Image (cartoon, rainbow, N blue to C red):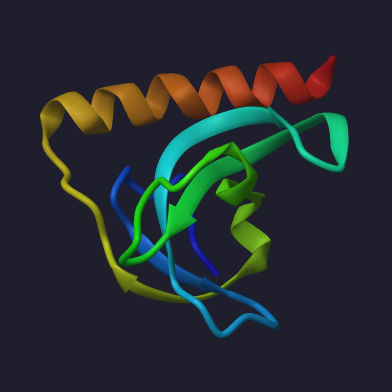
Length: 93
């Protein structure tokens, strides 16, 4: 559905979900599969961060709908390119 990583602050709906979430990070390990590197970390929207038990880890292919793209500028685009390279390398190992 989506090419590359969405910017921080993007609001999405995951497949088989009814609650929107907002992306707050990229490339995290943890959750039910601690060895897996997930594309995103997110919090409930509009609530935001409540506690560590309310963080969501997911990948691009789990996104059903994008409601809003987060802020994008030159700095974000440069960081996105580096983050995608790091994720790709980490998944090879």
